Structure formats: C-alpha cells, structure tokens
Length: 243
Image (cartoon, rainbow, N blue to C red; front, side, top):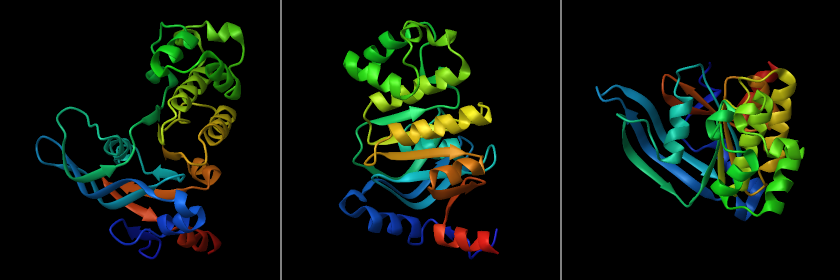
C-alpha cells in the first residue's frame, strides 16, 4: 500500500483529530499507548504501537490478515496478555471497565448456566435492564432466557455476548472478529446490534478481516501488518477509493 495512504502511528493521527473536532468535549482520550511493544519469551517482537490515542465515543476498525497481531492489539488495549509475553512501553487509561465480544459468542459465556441467570450473576444488572437489553438484541423469547448458552444457535450466542458487553456499561467495548463465524445476514445483524447497543459516548473497537465491516461502521481505521500498527487516514482512504 502506498506511503501516502498509510501514516505511521507516531505521526499525528488524522482520524483522531477529526473525531475530536466532531465530538468536542466527548472526544477525549480514554486510553493511550506510547512506544508499546509486546515480545515473545525468545525476544521476537510481536506487536509495535509507536503512539495511539483511543478517544471517547469513537468507532475503530482494526484490520489485517490472520496472525498479523489484531488480537494482540486488543489484548494490549485491555492490559492483559497471554502467558509468556512481555509488554514494554506506556499504557495509560481512564477506563475502569472493558466489555468484550469474542469471535464465538460461547467464548464469553458459561455454556451450562441459564442465560438470564448468568447475565445477572456476571453484571449485577436489574432484571428489567437485562430483559430490555435482551429484547434489543432480538432475544426477547422467555424460553431463550432459560436456555443454557450451549443450547443456543451460533447467531443467538453471539447476540447474547453483545448483550453481556452492553450490560457491563463499559466505556470501552472490544470485539474480536465478532462476525467471522456468521453468515452474511447474521453478520449484518450483529453489526447493527453493536452500533445500537454501544452508546454514543462509549468507544467500540472491532478487529476484523472483513472490509464490509469497516464500511458498515464508518470507522477510524487501524491496520496491523507483521505486528506493526499504522493508521489509515479516512481522507486518504476516500481519495484512494476515487482513483
């Protein structure tokens, strides 16, 4: 990809500045990385983020091929890394809770605890709040509320994981390839749910290999290649698309 399209993350982040202008006081950094590196036990560098500011209320898409480091970037945003990896650099955040939507909905849920009971135990949310969120994600059937997650379809389990993330009321919600295991219709539905459930003041970061997801979110765009995180300027992306 040409150098006039990709900008190193250490340079001023065009999308961050544009988003801050659009959002005013709400467009404040909630999480920042500086000179962030993650290395394997043998010293191999797996991830490099020279500088990154995540702003309140942003929608951010993270793209890159399998194994490029997308999931590791999400781990770095959470401040938790797989065993054996070493983080160096600076990570600062004002966030006290982070919601997470995994690739497979069942990965966010205990397979054997009935759905509503589980959401109540994990989040402490009131029954009316749980019922309202489940209705908003299309799981308003009382029979589903009594189901164990293992009894749900893949699409239903994914919607349940979106509901779980929403019920945390987290300022930052991360989604790791949340649509890759879904058909096109379920993918589009999950994206709509994420946009509807995650409030305008909450930040949503979605890792994906699907360009349709990036277009649907209308998001700030980070690209990961061989562990190096760069930012694709929306302005340059639009200009590139017109050529």
